[in-house]
Image (cartoon, rainbow, N blue to C red; front, side, top):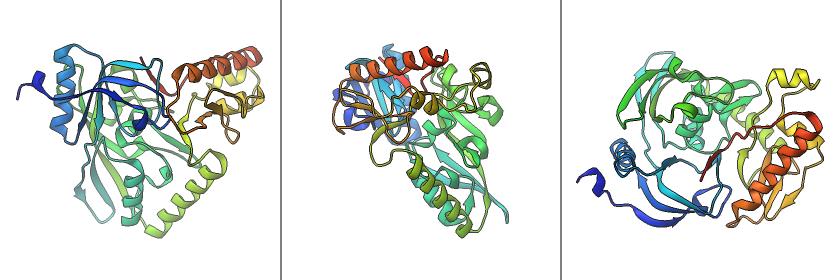
Length: 308
């Protein structure tokens, strides 16, 4: 079959695929379950010259409009394979569509250390690499164990790169700027006592539950933490965006179905857990940014990815 003849679904409601349940419809939608299908779907969008994006677990995503005029590719490419094993470590090939909660549980159970502090992290491996998802107690990033990866470049061609290519930093990877797509990666994990890994994972999850909204409709931390320079200039003791929002008295504030969490102010919750209009979300986000700017002279930057 020619690339341009790939069958897609038309006019699909995305709200059930998004953890924030934003009311949005995609012109075209396709679910892929293999590397070839994922590459072909990207090439299909390129051939048709239409916008597209890859959706994993539907976290860290927001829409500015009720209709996306392009192709949404739901990434269900799931692969986990041992590439190399020694007495001390495992080299594991993991696909971009692999669910992070499943990966953490499986590696902890097998005594493969590296992902245990990400217990409770939603989404997929691809999204976690894109955001360089992190945990701070202790500091642990999904990218820490990465050795090399396979990407789809801007022409729809496979490309092998090493870890340095991503320029990883706090909450950042180069994928956020070059629009290349993470297909799969090789991760180096350390053989460790499963009981120790389980306890680390348990403590991480417990802390998340105590300090963050849990079991509700949210897309994770909405804003990036501020830089050290911004913290210094504003004479603050923390980089936390949630702290700034809290000090503006916005915990619990809502517009429509969207509310600033009463537990952690850097989380926005869909209180109705139902399809909700993006205009209310965007209005709330705008108000938060204005209040923080007025009080601290700091312009918050969103951590979520917007599509329109």
